[in-house]
Length: 194
Image: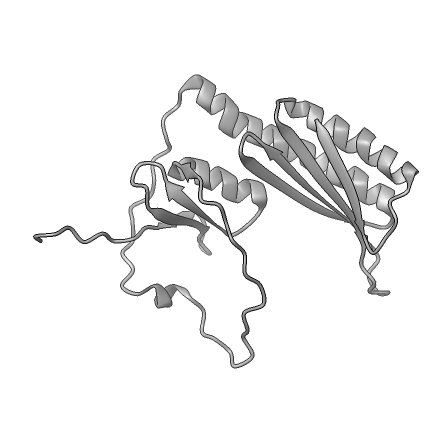
C-alpha cells in the first residue's frame, strides 16, 4: 500500500510524514486490497480568523473507485487524526456497499421513475452577470450501473456524478435532489422510423 505525502506552501517534516503513515496507514488497513494508493496533501489556510487553519486532504484509489476526505484542525496533527477517522468510516462504507454486495450477488436497487425534462437549461440556476467559468475538469468515463454511480457520488462527496451506463453505453448523470433522494439524467435517443 502506497501513501504519498505532499505539502502545499508548507514543509512536510519527518515527524508529520511518520504521523501520516501511522494514522492513515491504520485507516487503510480496514480495507487492505491491492492495488490501493493514497495521496495526502497537507496545507494551511492563511485566514487569521479561522480557528482551524490546518487542512488535510486524503484521496484513496481502490479497485477503480476514488474516496476523498478533507478535514480541518487546530494543528496539522489534529487534522490528520480527524482525516484518518473519516477515511476509516468511508472505507467501511465502501466495503459494505460495494464489495460485500458484489460478493453476495445482489441485484441493483430499484430506481425511482424517470421524470422527463424538456430542456436541460430548466435544471440550471439563472446566471448572474458575474458568473464565469473558473475550472475545467476532464473525467474518465467508466462503465457502471446506476447503483455503482450512486455509491461513487457518496464516496467522493459530490452532488452529482457523470458516468457511462454499462447497459446502454451512453453518458448519464446521477445527482442528489434537493428534496431528498437521487435523480438520473439520461439522453433521449430517437429511434429511426418513429
